[in-house]
Length: 180
Image (cartoon, rainbow, N blue to C red; front, side, top):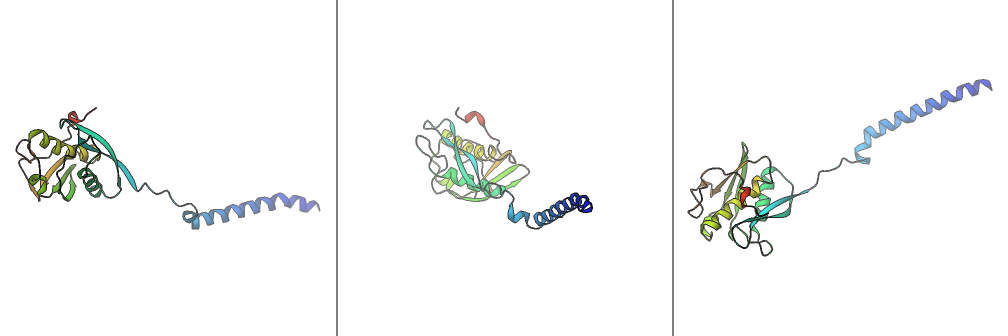
């Protein structure tokens, strides 16, 4: 009887040790199924820059896009910028414009638009400034991997969109145009 009392603590410790080992093995084998790793969010918030009703300033507007590669996210962001905003904001990209491709190399985003960017542009220096910098600011200020944006039309650099603002080189964001 005295022997059983001495063995009892050792049996309890042994049982606890076996239980611990089994729990570790089960968690190692099935842990991800029981406790799946947290998935990153499938969407992210970006800021689009639309023109105000005076055509002089850009107004930041939040929008949600689906996550993807850097190039996919930039393309999705620019597709959202093409859509008409809520009044009194005014869209800056003309009707019918398509985004043909986006690629990022050495902190420069090369964004290729269809010819409608030039063909359907209303013209005028203010409208051209708003169009160019709504694109540049929307890309450069939402994606830290991008410092400059090169606007292309049908795969080629152009001197200007409508005769006023040089776009034949990559441009940096211009925060002075942002309202507020």
